Image (tube, rainbow, N blue to C red; front, side, top):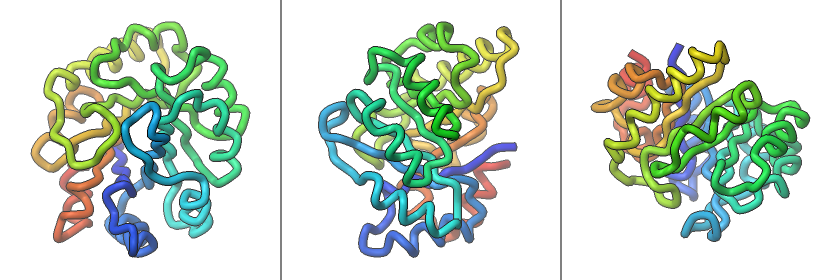
Length: 214
């Protein structure tokens, strides 16, 4: 079943609670947190405090996407804050295997994210160590960007890799996801769709989520 994870990065920051409730009422499955440090990406977003408040509401499982340098420094803190899924970038750590095991040891699902120009070959060396592969279809750092078409085929490559190895893992897509391209993304093998601007700008959130899941 396809999951939809609205990204809080695109919500109205003066009404974050309302944004979380909107995602829940629309039938979303996860709440996606784009955590940025101003180093790995050219932007700073929010940290453990906001995630803890959202997780404490019990409305949706929190999916923490750590776009930060040396993410292993903060894995335990985000787990303690209530994250259900923690994803680190392959490009941001020198010890990807260790970081993924650290996430699992904290009781969370472990994810590994790849920037648009990063080859999925690096996943071959950690097959079985992650529960989710996140394909970035925009360069991370800012919401509202258009999907990079060349990144889409990477979804199919990862899907083939997982099936050949007999490994089960979600394939998440983040960046420019909307009603016009969702079918192509899921057709390539995506199972979790992150939608930020498109979701929060939609007049009917529930219809938007239903259309992405079709």
